Image (cartoon, rainbow, N blue to C red; front, top):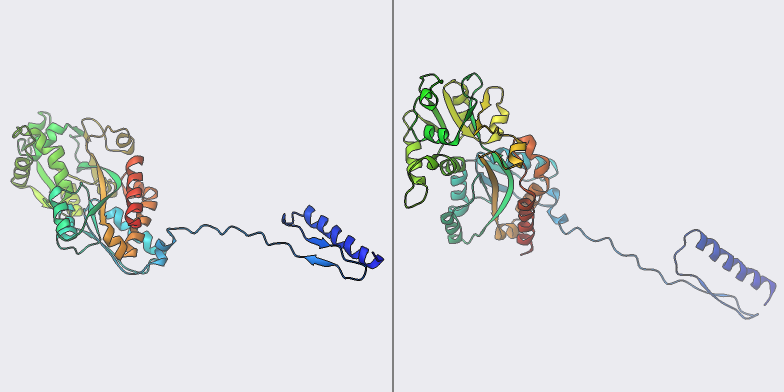
Length: 357
């Protein structure tokens, strides 16, 4: 081997050692020994394939990756939470409109299951069998997503100085008309008429209160709580004020020291300077009591949609994915409490399954 050729080969080998020491790829350059009359033949290394980064299957549902509008309606209780999530969704790049109407859970299911006008129904109670049947009639199969927990607040004016706690039984008797003056509730209370404020019959809050409180103080019918009788008694109370707008109820209760009402905890939080929340069975509505399962008027909050809607309108799927992914970071600020971990995971699993259809 001539001196120039040997020098070239040594240089190549030396360079390979340098590259190896510097973390060069495992594949090495091979040098074929040339004859005395041939130039060295260098065989280039085989490229080592690099593994492509896995694609995010949910990237197509980013707020700025979808277009169109999203229409939601229903519970006045869920309204402030859905409104917050809609605002954040748009801040993250969604260019369409998100409509959130506060019309009550029952009216929300009417628009979703009968008229078919909305993409999402907000509800402060679970959907009823009859509403599921109405959905089926227009080829919709509602999917339930648990988004949080409400501690239903029973409230009086902050100026009230004689009520701090009521039992569920006392509360039921007030809202079915058995007690009409405060001294009937407790002889130490003033002999003043009780002024009742309640959500209207289209409200999921009304439905929940009837079942959890009012019907419990009436005689049972066929071994079941008399829900219908409790509804009739509450709706028939002389002087009672009803509204689907919780802000109207807030104004009514704060205007009189003898008024009492109930609504979602978020509305109490927003107006805690003018109102006070009454403890129920000596348990105050707060996160600790809700998490411990001690507050007797804690209830789940839901939103509903349908797999076909998600397939036809990717913007709705994107909004629901954003909602569930971010709700726990915002729900306490709104005035509610996170759903139990297992219930929340079931909601995320339901959404994933619906999108995969």
